[in-house]
Length: 372
Image (cartoon, rainbow, N blue to C red; front, side, top):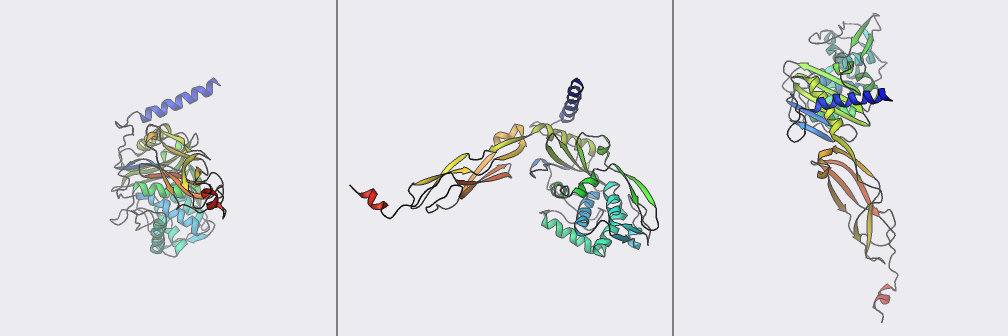
């Protein structure tokens, strides 16, 4: 028991040391030119610095490359390495050679763990038939995911004026990708071995994300990225004490320190709060031709939201009512909704339903009301 308490004490000391340098209004300072911190459960951003500013994503691009390939093809399919894939030698690679055969799953492993640039070209050609077609699919997927300020030109993140994304878009992409168990397992893998089918050979690879090697408690991934123009980039996810966070830092002077500071601050500052309880009363709504003039509206479910503890008083509630119903009204009948927002972000919503039955007036009701 004493040992567990000691470990817990040192864990929180570690977190407090990370979050000590903060802005005057309580948010952490980071060296990155653009950054974001998202609650992975709700998609709410706790922190953003130039979050919607277009930046070069470098190898963070490979998150889209790999999640798309996972959704469109079987990892067990064999890929024959082309001249184009074998000709990729700038940056990290696994020395693919023309004519080799290797399974798609091994290429995905190389792309996500050791950030192999040649592997992404082979992935694209193996899934779509050619690299440029696959890139068009990447852009179509970005549109579907609501990544409105993202455009891809290649599969590995090489610098190009038309190849860009934002910290917010990349956080949303990562949140989506982490729902795939196969993707989530690869991005948290520290070391692995890539195997070829023909000729048979193997290569030991180590994850480029240093945080996975003991850099932060509860870390679950995700990906590094580096080019001269993009600078140091990193997306890091962590799960601790029931809270799941995603930190994005772009063009950072110290990406690991920035990511740790954001994650630690989020774990310490963010709090889950009850926004409403099931059956909680909100308002009344007029009922046409009913035995009662109106009906009470209550929440149909409990809603829990996450937001920084110091700003919980800024939680906003918006009540939307449907047009007045005509009797009869049944208990549980949906007649509106309540929406919870913080900093223009929707945190959750609940339906407002009738709290009781309201019967229709009988034909003699008018005479009953006007009789002497």
